[in-house]
Amino acid sequence: MTTREARGLPAVDTEEETIAGYLQRHPEFFERHQAVLARLKLPHARGGSAISLVERQIEVLREKQAALEAKLAELVSVARANDAISGRLHRFTRRLLGSMPRAEAIARIDAGLREDFDAFHAALVLIGTQPDPAAPRFVRTVAADDPHLKSFDSLFAGGKPRCGQARDSQREFLFGPEGQDMGSLALVPLGEKGCLGLLALGSADRDRFHPGMSTELLGRLAELLADSLSGAPAR
Image (tube, rainbow, N blue to C red; front, side, top):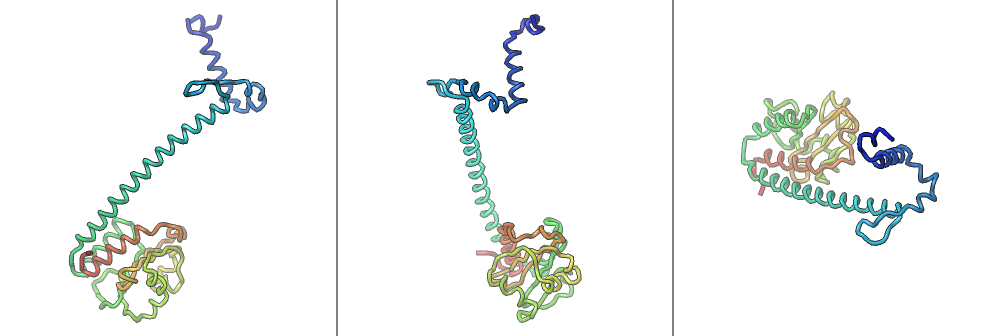
């Protein structure tokens, strides 16, 4: 008599646990004993005739796949709903951006980039504005015909943010001596075709801003900055 039987517990449970444990430790068992595998039959999950172990495994996998697909569909639905809410909130925020002095807008942009986005390497290039001695250090004011802007013509023509590497001359223009330490940049045109200028975010990490990354949020940031700098709420 086994110890389990002496305690009044059925020995069959012990045998099943032993078999289950052995099969878990030796999943290759049925590869060595394919004849045993072929003779195994299991009741169909939905009744009816018996099916083989392999058929049963396929059935279980299909059920798991169906459950995962349902969960994925639910997550996609939630993500789309959140994206729609985010879009409405963005448009609402743009409507709230009323007129304010440009100096105040620039000060808020400077603080927001540093405190909210940890963007300590940033340059804001404003086109066709008068230099302001009191402006933060990260602001560059240039004339519309400034020769440095020629290298950004394709960026302005596209009107969309761009991430990746930049020329040495571009990095030097945007960040001065610190430009040589910038491994990657995010360049964000401001206004229609960059009419207001551009925002540049830099990182020493070459992979921080790469061409494959999504620029949707940078585009929304550009719209908010353009609205605050132009001093007119979005329509």
